Image 1 (cartoon, rainbow, N blue to C red):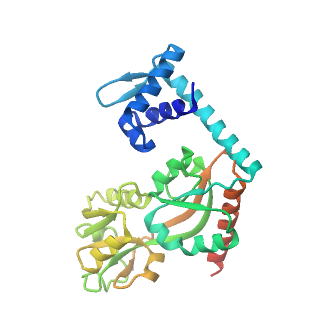
Image 2 (image 1 turned 30 degrees about the vertical axis):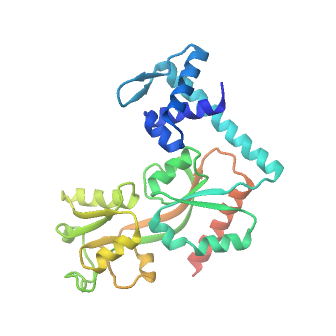
Length: 295
């Protein structure tokens, strides 16, 4: 049994697909298939029930997955401890949603690297829900997320700020002179929404559902530049964090009634060994949050 075989097996168990596991791990499908066959042969066990496009764990496979996952987590934590002992600094892997990265970066990263120039940071763009899941899977060390989703209690967290969602339009839009809007007023408006793996989207979808309205979504986008251009050209309106507007021109942010508050924060996995670099980043974030509140 090899560690890499267990990693391939656990990936297929999570994604229920050799194809998807291969894509996520950047390896070939035959390599993963071979690893699983070798595990089944070594332990005389059938791990999966195979169908055309889906892999389902057998009863024995479920037990094997639990044990394998525990073993891999132990290996990862022990490796982190060994790196600390040897003072080998590995990059801190941080997931950041594109919209939130505009609010906090690069200023936050510059400030951290000024204080800790020897600690490398690797930033990877993921929407909040996906980033939080990757923290749970130990693929990311930390994630900057919108904290308004139901599984937030499964993670350790540090709130950085509280923001509001506003409805953004061009100055030529019919609603541009309104002091405030309600979700009811937007039921027929063409909307540019954020991508589907977004906490903000889930919040807005629930509000439209509460008034039994299906929103008129013109486009779903993940990049702020795209959203801004569509709104500036009066092709539709968009829901954005109010903090974003200070660095944007050509858009008008209209308050929404009732107010939609959103908490933004940093999350990390519960029960996981935190190496000194990650611990320093968490501590730095807490201080950074205090600075934002004071200002």
